[in-house]
Image (cartoon, rainbow, N blue to C red; front, side, top):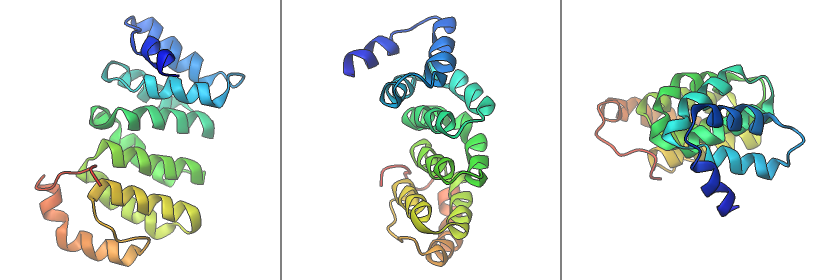
Length: 171
C-alpha cells in the first residue's frame, strides 16, 4: 500500500491525475481498499481541483465518500471545497453525511462548525455519534452527542472561533 501511495503521489500530469481520480476511484470492479488508497494518495494539493470536480459530479454514495476521504486527507489544502462539503451534511445518505463531517473536521475551518451542529441536531444513532466525534476533532471540545450543549457552547464562543482565535482540527 505504501509503495502504491508513493507512486500515485508522483503523478505530475494533469491528465494522469484526472485519470486516477475519475477512472481509478469510479472503477467499481477495483477492490474498495485499493480505491481508498487512491483517494488518500490523491490527497495532494495539486489534486484538489480534480477531487472537487469529481465530488460535484458524483451520484454514488461510495464514490462520494471516497472523494470526501481524499479531500479530508488533504486537510486545510481543501478549504475551497468547504461550501460543497457543507451541503453534503444534508445528503439523503447517512454515510455521506458522516463522511462530510469527518472531512470538514480535517479541513478545519470555523465556518463549518455551525452547519455541523445543525446536522448533529437532526441526526440520531451512529451518524449522530460520528458527527459529534468530528466536532470534537474539529474543535478540541468534548461535548459528546448533546446537541443542546454544542449549541450553547457555540452561542457563547462563536465570535472568537470565527475571528480565528482558536486552532482547529487538532482534537
